[in-house]
Amino acid sequence: MLLLDIVLIALALSMILVVGRLVIGPSDADRATALDLAFVHVLASVAVLAARLDVPAILDLVLVGTLVGFLATVSLARLLDRGRS
Image 1 (spheres, helix red, strand yellow):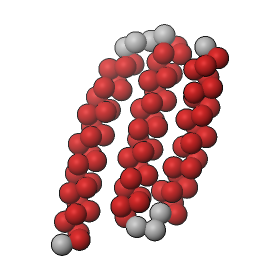
Image 2 (cartoon, helix red, strand yellow; image 1 turned 180 degrees about the vertical axis):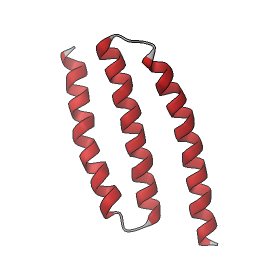
Image 3 (tube, rainbow, N blue to C red; image 1 turned 90 degrees about the vertical axis):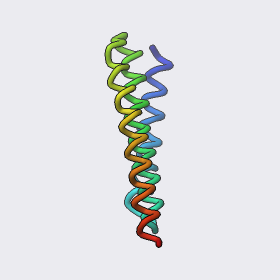
Image 4 (cartoon, rainbow, N blue to C red; image 1 turned 180 degrees about the horizontal axis):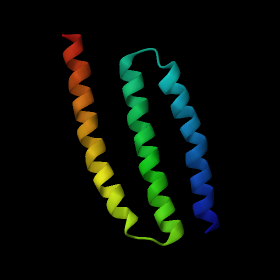
């Protein structure tokens, strides 16, 4: 359990850096990448929390979130690419 607590703390600390990039990011692509990484951090935190609390049903939420995150990333990349041309 101690290792999972350390992983949760590390994810929380790295999320601070991601939020900083989300706010400061000079371009829209930087902000989009930071938003995608923030979503991955949230999903990883939920997965670690599911293991910490020993509730495997929450992993279904992580699976659905991963699929939604992938579709959002593809949509955002198309939107940014369309803005360039």
